[in-house]
Amino acid sequence: MGGLWDLITVNPVIFWLAVAVVAGIFEAATVGLVSIWFSIGALVTMLPAALGIGFNFQIIVFIAASVVAMIFTRPFLKNILHVEKTPTNADLVIGQKGVVVSPVDNILEKGRVLANGLEWAARSADGTKLDKGAVVLVKELRGVKLIVEKVSDKEEEN
Image (cartoon, rainbow, N blue to C red; front, side, top):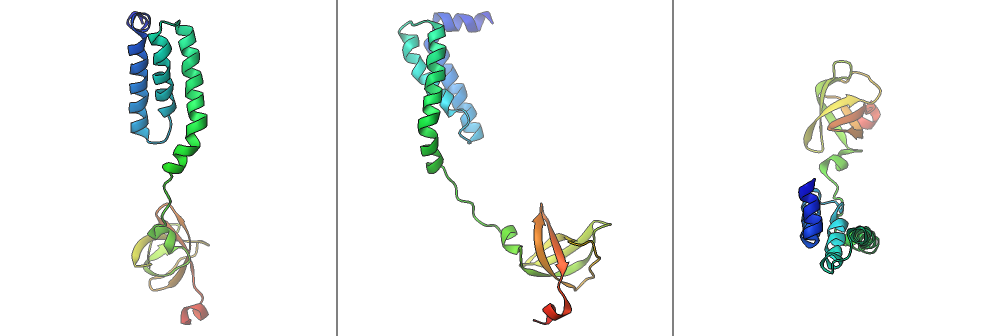
């Protein structure tokens, strides 16, 4: 601990620069607007540190600058960094009809369905066994498994 305290007391500007760099590296690793505020706060705190103002006041400046940076820049950065969610094939398969290519049995945890051009692991919504060739409707997606229900014979004809 003596080395850190020596750095704080002898050259606090370097200490705050190190805090800013470490927070920046952490931010780059997470890419989630988690620690960028601390980088900004540390950079602002370098000014009172360079002027020789006491460490307790530097801590107050660091906290205040970090909070102010978060309050004023977070909404702006969220809008800039906003990534629109694009529907995937998984989203598109819900509501589609498919064909059982390997018998579906929930108890044995087996079964495959061809839906929307892809073969998926599948389970029946009501627990009934579905034979190969049965036409099914995709009700939901759980992980990478389709939850399906058998289409009635009347619906199959349509």
